[in-house]
Amino acid sequence: MDPRISLAPHMWDGQHELRWSIERIADEALDRAGVELDPRGYLIGIPDGDDALPVLVDPQRDAFDVTRLENLHPHFTSLFEERRARMCPSRTDDESTATWHPDHYLAALREGCRRDVMREALTRAATFADRVVHVGISIVVGDYRVFPVLAVLRRPCE
Image (tube, rainbow, N blue to C red; front, side):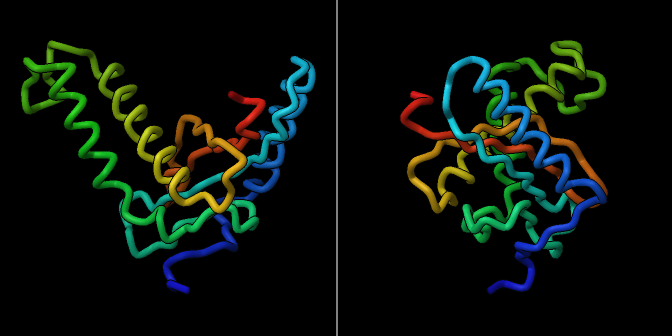
């Protein structure tokens, strides 16, 4: 196994409790809605700036081939530039002085691109076929960009 890939993650104290809480809250909400999707929660940590750090997946369930989650930053950037050029054709090179869209719009566009790339990468990396992944808004914690992920049963979700 590549030494830069870790299946025994530790990004911050309390991460396991957060991941468990996400899963439990989703399960309870879906149960109350009368839908049985059996959600499985994950936290995916992608190094934010130091590609020598391992990709981290919590919990250890071997649900993803983590080697397929390496080096996603160029994909994030490429998709963002493509969408920005298409959606904001009159942009300037300096985002901070752009008058065509406020900074919060660009931040939301960038995050949407991150989530789309992550969802596609997780779908390819999944070791299961009976579930579909949903990716939440990421945050930076220490050296990692952390994505909350729910994998739910495909058939009832459709």
